Image 1 (cartoon, rainbow, N blue to C red):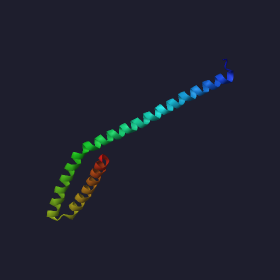
Image 2 (cartoon, one colour):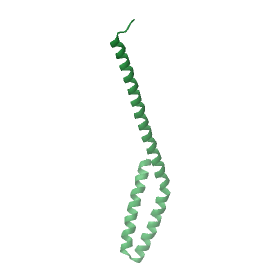
Image 3 (cartoon, rainbow, N blue to C red):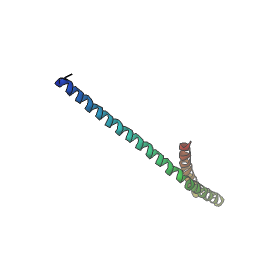
Length: 98
C-alpha cells in the first residue's frame, strides 16, 4: 500500500505532536514531583524546628513570669507578643502534621 505525500506528511505531523505532548506531560509530571518534594522538605524542616520553638516558649513564659512579679508592663507586653508569635508558629507546624 502506497501512501500519498499528504498521508506521509500527516503521519509525520501526528508523530511529532505525540512526541511534543509526551515531552510536555513528562515536564509537567517533573514539575509536580519537584513541588511535592519541596513540600516534603519544608515539612521536615518545620518538624525539626518544633523543639526549638517549644524551648523559646518556655523561655518566654519564664520571662513573662518574672515581668509579672516585677510588675513591668513593658516586658509583659513584649513577652505576650513573643508568645503569641511562637504560638502561631507552633500551631501552623502542628496543623500541617495532622
